[in-house]
Image (tube, rainbow, N blue to C red; front, top):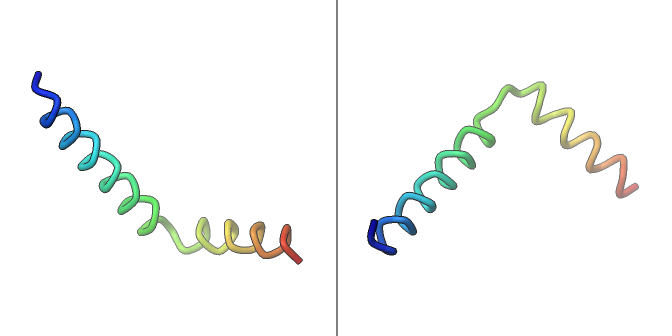
Length: 41
């Protein structure tokens, strides 16, 4: 497999993961934000 194809697959997989994580349930995002804010305060 060419190196450029591996890089392309890695980038597309990472972008898909970020998209799924950012579009996750609002409850999950809210709890993560609460934990982050609670830890910094």
